[in-house]
Every structure is written in structure tokens, then in C-alpha cells.
Length: 287
Image (cartoon, rainbow, N blue to C red; front, side):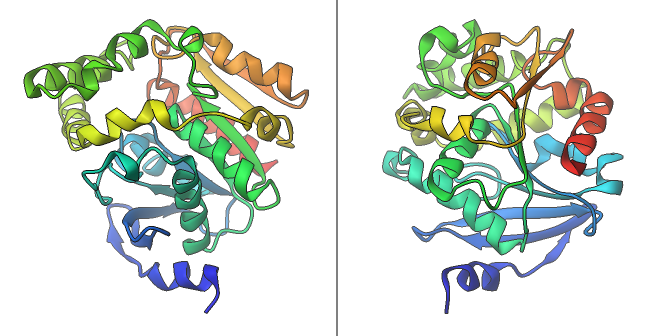
């Protein structure tokens, strides 16, 4: 049985709200939960969320007009959402595992050449995937509020203020940090019911994940970004988690890259300006 056949055997579909849910076995034996939505004959898009988030973060894509024209696959990162949550820092600090997870999802879903959308930490994961698996299986990459290099001078005030607090051994400290970290993702607070849901899945992430995130690294990724044939960086001008330079550096690395700035949006422009984001992503994925 081939490597890809192993993953495809795991992809047993079960109903999910407005789509199908399937499991993916990782190379180190964890179970990732993924969802498929939308028009299966449309352009393929893989949605890779950020730190503390889940598939539910993409609800304004999977339940919106984007799903009418595009084939969407989203998954819960290891340690997040419905995916496995090992209580070990080692399960989260190896960049090769994060890259292999994304590769496994693409294989299990049977995608040919998807557009990969990486939000925040998801952009770093996309970079590691490109570095290890190349560009042949990817049509394009859209990074959103991207983390392209884990260095303090490119992080925003909110990310810097929370990185140690999120890993605190004190539950009260960690709980307060999760709430304020999430609040800082938005220029305007989400509706109360939606924020409660977001807070719930952010709180599911184990402390070990937060301890490990700074160790994932970014070595060698500039070469991977430079070779992406089609690269779009999306950034909100009120983002407090990552600085504009985190995205604009990609334009210096890759002449084919372009920047789309969302005025009045913060770290989650796909949520705060979903109509514009969905239009731009649909056009970008269509080529």
C-alpha cells in the first residue's frame, strides 16, 4: 500500500453541517478531523487556520457564497478543535510534522492542485509544507495575517504580550490570556454568541501547544516563499498580532507576490470583511 493510499483509506466521509467530515491519520499516529464543503467540481481550496482556532473559524467561507463556486477543505490542526491533543510539547514543536499533516489532508481529500490559504500560524505551516513537499501539488498560496518568520520585530503588540501568558501554568492567567488574545484578533468585537463559540474552541487547545509554538522555526522558508508561482498576502491594517512587514517581506522575496490590504480590519479579515475576502479568494483560486 502506498503512502497516499494510507491517507485515502482514512477519508471516510460522514455528514457535517453544510458538508462532510472525515478523519486523517498523521505520520505519528494522531487523528486529524477535516471537513469538505462546497462545489466539488470548482477550484480546490485548503483552509489552514491559526493558533487556537478550528474549522469553525472559516464559517463565513464554508457557509457563504465562496462554497457555491469552490471546493473547500478545512481541518483542525493537531492540538485544536476535534483533532488529537497530545499532552506533549514534542508533538507540536517539529515543523516536519505540521507540514506532513497538511500533506496528509491534501492526499486524503484527493485534491489535485489546491490553493492553500494559511491564516497566521497556518501561513507558517504552509511555508513548511512548500519547503518539504515542493510547489508541484499547489496551484497558489494565499497567506492571511501571515506569520512568515517567527521573530519579535515582525510580531504585533498583541502577539508579543500574550505569547508567555498563553503558556502559563496558572489556569486563571492562561484563561484570561486566551480571551484577550482572541479579542485582539478583531477591530470590532464579533456578536456575543459567535465570540462565545470562538472562546470555547480556543480554550480547547492544550498548554503544551502554546509552549511549543515558538520552537517551530522558520529556517529555510524564504526560499520556499520565493518559488511560489502565485502568492497573495492578505493583511488588515488594524492587525495587532502581526506587523505589515510580515507580509510585505514576501513581495521582496517573490516578484510574483501581491498584497491586499483591508482597511479597518484586524487579524481576521476573512471574518471581518468576508464578502470582499470571498470574492478575492474565488478569483485568485480560479486563476
